[in-house]
Length: 77
Image 1 (tube, rainbow, N blue to C red):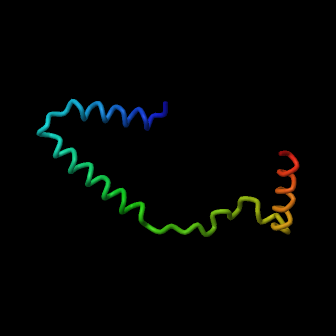
Image 2 (cartoon, rainbow, N blue to C red):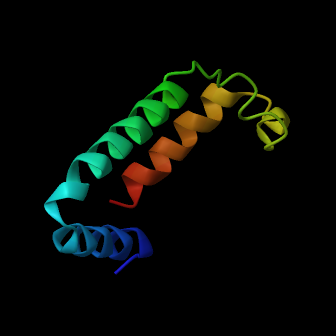
Image 3 (tube, helix red, strand yellow):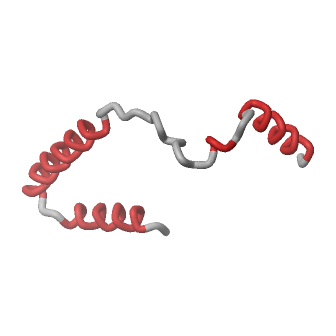
């Protein structure tokens, strides 16, 4: 099991042990965390240059190369 799943399970178990009076505090804290996370993920990010210096510059005829690779994949099915 991955560590994220284990962490989530642990948090759920700890929440079950909290007294009722603390649940509102935890809820407010979680809402704050989620709001901050949402704001950070809404930033636009450009993918321009993502493939730069990855070796694609060496391919002279990219459409032809793609066609050949697709033909090879079909032959191996």
